[in-house]
Image (cartoon, rainbow, N blue to C red; front, side):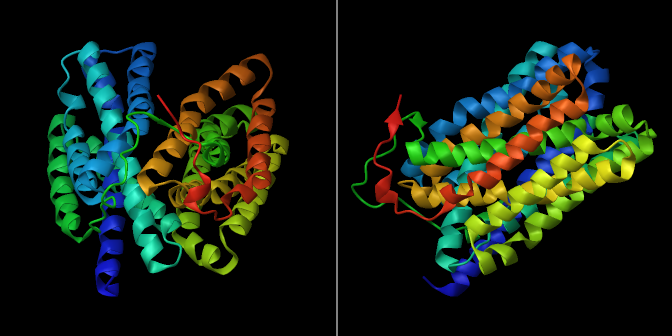
Length: 390
């Protein structure tokens, strides 16, 4: 394939990742507006915010068949467009019941789009012959930060969320559509059987999914609990506590954007081992910390440590599966389910023990990433013949 086509596809999929992240970042900033607008209590809002996770986890195992039938490029273009449109809809919900249904669909589209754009990224990576997946996930982080920054500005200016989110949806829809024609047009070989309607991962992919699960567990726990940890354990001010999240997010984004250079030099297995080592050290530092500086440093190490793990797990799954979309779908379902479990598990353990004890779980999960790094060694797709389907 012409190298110019592949290079343009790399730019296009990077833009697609950034657009996906910008939708997520934009929505996150207007959740307080939604709560106030609908008069929702914390419990009601929390229940509504579970809906996207449910939608994603249910639909991700199904999208491989859709991508097989229509091709990865058309699937990516359609789903990123739907994802942008979905940004405008939650703010239009007249009540909590409609919001829950809307967020269920929002999460379904998000999950399916996540799978196919990662599959497209793996196709580009295979043709380039070098690692790009951490950088693509870094672009997602950049998009999320950009969308969040615009959302913060809109909220401070008192812009109605319905206006802000509709405008962002329109802008991002145009940007995503402009990148679409440059994506690789990858289609299944003639005569290849379509994946089952609901694909469960093979045994090798289950191991990869377990590594991804542990990485997302650490990411979700640190992201949701770092500021609370600083306040309750070290007794610092709200401003300093907020810096823990900023440091965590910065090191994770920087680790993803620079991760490809490390992967190209030492390979994915060693990269994940180093990542697990850094994240484990960060977990130990957090558990031991009783003052802000070591706690913040610990969370920054966790962010740096988990940065490249999920992108590399997805790349390994795409290479090991019969098709990239099928491999990513199975592993993504396992990995992202951790984000559903981790925050509540940390809170539950902390409620009966303490936050430092709860972060022992994070440290153990990070050590599991280190121990499971060998599962990312490249293996031919033919080894994965034991797929289960429902």
